[in-house]
Amino acid sequence: MIFTEPKRYYVERRVTERMTATGASSFELYFARLRADLQGEIEQFVNAFTINETYFYREEHQLACLTSELLAARLNAKPRGAPIRIWSVPCSTGEEPYSIAIWLLENWPYVDEHDIEIVGSDIDTGAIALARGGVYGKRALSRLSPQVVDRYFTAVDAESWQIVSDLRDSVRFTRVNIVERAETQPHGQFDVIFCRNVLIYFDDLSRRTAAENLFENLLPGGFICLGHTESMSRISPLFEVARFADAIVYQRPSR
Amino acid sequence: MPLIRKPPPAGAQTGPAAPDSAAVFEALARGTDDERWAAARAAADVPGIVPALEDALEREQKPVVREALFSALARIASPQSIEAVVPFLRSDDALVRTEATDALLAAKEAAWPYFAALLRDPSVDVRILACGLARDMPSDVAVKLYCDVLESEPDVNVCAAAVEVLAEIGETAALPALERCATRFSDTPFLVFSIQMAIDRVRSQASGSRA
Amino acid sequence: MTNDAPKRVLVVDDASLVRLYYRTALESAGFEVVEALNGLEALEHLLGGHFDLVIVDVNMPQMDGISFLQTLRAKSLPVSSIPAMVISSEAAPKRVAAASAAGANFYSVKPLRAEAIVQYASLLCGARHG
Image 1 (spheres, rainbow over the protein chains, first blue to last red):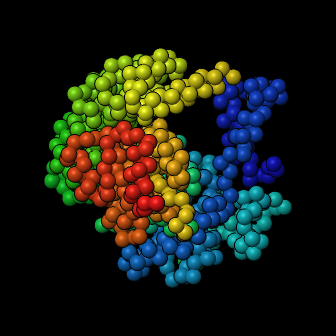
Image 2 (image 1 turned 45 degrees about the horizontal axis):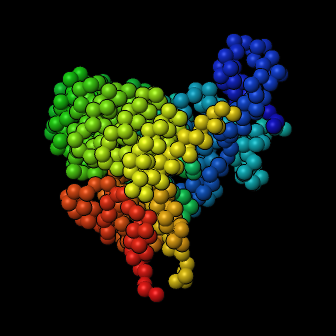
């Protein structure tokens, strides 16, 4: 693995996690543990860096579903001129909300006819800060064509690219804990929510609360997309199943 | 560029105001669907709300609102709130039974003291539902409860529900009771099969943990 | 799909050992079996694949069998008319009536013998003699 400057925060986070997990009170103590491979720490260390990696155009089939089915369904249900609101939560370091923006600009024929508001939110303020900065390395961009990289990024150095300022300025980033209604409710109601790979980590009660919060943040008839290995069948009874060619998504019932 | 960035709505940082208790009581009793939903979501923070939640549940027809009412009771997690949920296990509406079961599971430790009695309820249907509830209890306590069921429960489906959870928990302490139950119900192929599968799972989990 | 293709059964029950028992019985008789642990997961499968029969329990987390049947029958899709057998521990007439009203084609009380499951499944999938 190659770690470039934008990854420094990511690396620090992971090392801190391993120090906490092993009870190491200093980096020296942790490093000694790593060198001795105590209790398989090398493997743990590697795992910490390779799971839950995020990159642009992850789960592309859901983005395809967005432009092929979901937006049309939402436009049918909304008054003319009402903006389309899309929420990416958790947004981590911003790959997902920026991916949604780029995907729409690249793939949705009607993108110029509608106002689209994209919000990215995460509990981690460090991740939010990085998202606002919009600087990414080669690995994060690996699914994007050179033409797309050219259009939406400027090279910062040999290993880093930054989202163009127009696009960075168009996405609003906020801090939110999805279990806290006082924090979720002010975000208003959305047409589509992407909430991937987080609900499954909560206990039953927190999961219920988070699902209720997200329900509240959806317009009637709005859609919520989970991670491709996740299902509402293990999370909440509030949403209806909506199966499309590209993806299974869930829907808040219309009035 | 069609992407627009709106400033956050005025007052966005503060979120909903602390619930006005009187308004919550009022909305639970007489509100529109949206008002009852909002009241149910705010209810867990309102002192003395449990009887009002019970009343609301008796009348509520909308599953979405009921879910929030049950969530409030699960979140309050007092003996009074758990006792408010338990009667709904007997509902004629399958969805209400499911909602009550899920709420008791979400309430975790607060609901545990009630399971031993529910496992001895006069209704077979309630005893079956109760078997699903103790799976998150500390395993030694759960194993004892379920083994007691296997030793003395007359209904085969209640035993099957207990076997299902014992297979999940995987403690070898359950093996003798499992074997005795299979003998007791030797004429019921489904239960004999289930117990054999459970014994296999318990044994393989036990040998796995010795590795 | 030819007449020789194996019939596909969706088995819906939150108890893994119940699903395993049905799977063992049905696969031995040549059926293909897919499992779901509640009504919501069952809908996800049904909306995305071809099935000849759904066997469904009543009491399951998140979405029970009655709500599942009501939701399924209310959709105006080809899959909405799939044969559905409810197999439940509940024997009371009002429980049977509720399942019937929700759209069950057949109701049976647990525990079922393997031979009976296969027999009913074959019937509901349109078995012919000979």
